[in-house]
Image (cartoon, rainbow, N blue to C red; front, top):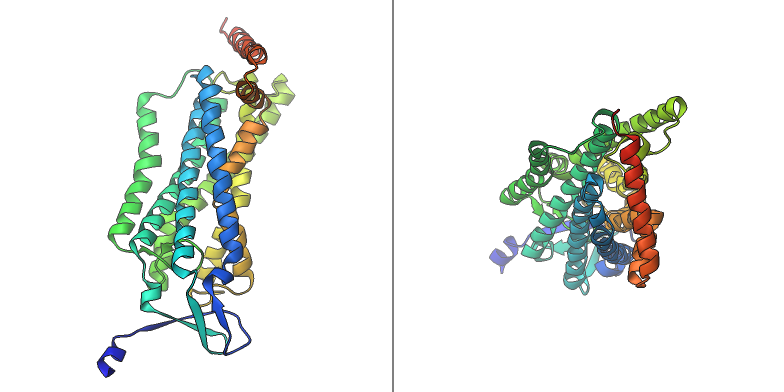
Length: 365
């Protein structure tokens, strides 16, 4: 018996409570986050379906529209994130739904090693979520660079195949390689700071911070910086074009863009509002204002609610911006769904007329 007791390790996690004998359940503690994550993931699944449908129905009519293809890549990335979070939440419910947390002293609860173990589902879910997040940040940045180049520096033609290969290599292969490296180093796992898995809490704090930066936060900060600079630059550029040449829309300036492509500027703002909460939690962790042994207290728990919904819902808000707010896409989808052939053909004729007009206006003399 003594030998058996020596092999048992107890890991402590702190949760606010006022009663030493009070029992709690992880499912009850995370009830709001579970609900928010599942709702957000479901909305993203539906939004992704509509975005893919819109691309097949609408954007197949405009094969030269590179920007919408980049949006598809971004949607795939955000969909992968939602899938990862959904798997993590279902796993959390299945494993910890009936696991009580026993208080042994004021504000202290204990878990056994068996309860804290990072199972294969946890590792796979962490891999999926980590890869999808890095993909999303990469394609956000790629869209910003594409808009800047297409609007300011290269208004005619398309990307060369060398540029496309480089872009896809950086945006797809590099993040995937980092996620594989993290899995090989066995740093992916559970940490009880959410209903999903990411970096193991059993690592030292310095190792956790390093891998968080390498596998997500660093990419996120670079994406925020680049897209913010591009947003301000493009807004200023369009203001100058409007005052000097009365060119008010993107398609007035560049053949490679549509008027509706200006919506991409607001895509970045949506990304900031949805995903900034996890970044704030990271800096709180770095500053020492909270740690993995008390992840449910105060402002951190409030930020977790926002992160649970925001991280999983980006594909849905992308759908609202590019399928609902875009009047032409909305009309085409609606007429196609309702089999209104006449209205569908009228919109197609307006698209063709606009394309012909733009070609004639921008044709070199």
